[in-house]
Amino acid sequence: MMTPGDSIASTGVDLERIARAVREILSAVGEDPDREGLRDTPRRVARMYAEVFEGLRQDPASHLQTAFTEEYDELVVLRDIPFHSMCEHHLLPFEGVAHVGYLPDGRIAGISKLARVVDAFARRPQVQERLTNQVADILMERLAAKGVAVIMEATHTCMTCRGVKKPGSIMVTSAMRGRCKSDARTRGEVLHLLGNLSR
Image 1 (cartoon, rainbow, N blue to C red):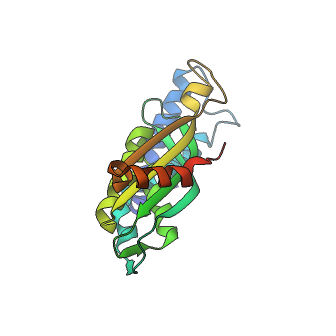
Image 2 (image 1 turned 180 degrees about the horizontal axis):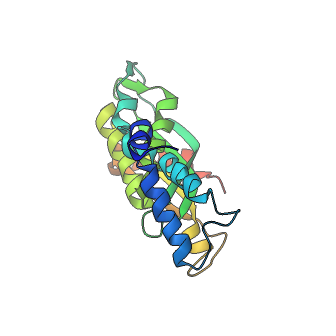
Image 3 (image 1 turned 90 degrees about the vertical axis):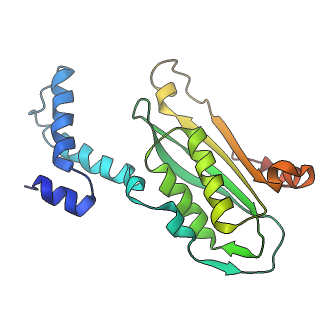
């Protein structure tokens, strides 16, 4: 059996504390947490939370520490980056794709780093609007880009399986920075490149 100290040391998360809380929730909704199907659920949920919130223990900027000098001054776009996040209002998942574009000013990032930045911000309690802004801001700052555009599309289970119950609805958010916001031609080009979205 894992002790609380061990669980924190290995994951950065108090797995035992989460498991106790999940057990209490099961009892509070009228279930028997000791029945066969639920006996290991608190521990499974604890490990799941450690995984889906691992972004809380990551520095997204670390993925952009290495950039390359390159005299490239046209838009760089990476589309359809899958992401999974957790709505901070109901602790239910939302997931979708991110489309990221930036206008370099002599420095480019490895494309996998763009996806890692999205994941680092997504894997924490979030709202989609903040997530979109965070990705745009860090790319603008760390790459010293002339402009950045981020568009995110996601389905939120907090409104598809509860509350208003509207399955199939998709939320789209955008964040434009620098010339992608202020220059009409650059904005038009990036929106054209990102315009044929996933649906």
